Length: 117
Image (cartoon, rainbow, N blue to C red; front, side):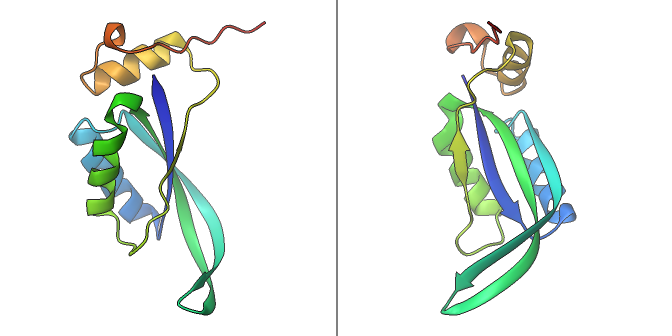
């Protein structure tokens, strides 16, 4: 089974460096950088506004706990946003590729198959 994990980062270069590190460790199959995010939030009693990038990681569900530890160790924010969700459908080919990329055989995991009605 695949999880999508979202996080925000200050810029594309930091995002690319973190993605490369986690893909190299086989902690994530891939990460997609979505530039142009604008976050407005309260931090230490002050309303802040920041330009950020969103990163969507695709990871094996079985590796979620260790992935979060790895991402927290690399993340530049004091309190990083790390949110995961299970997509309703993932193609069998993508699931098999993503799991194999992280050294998890598809036979060892529940494979989500896209089956349009």
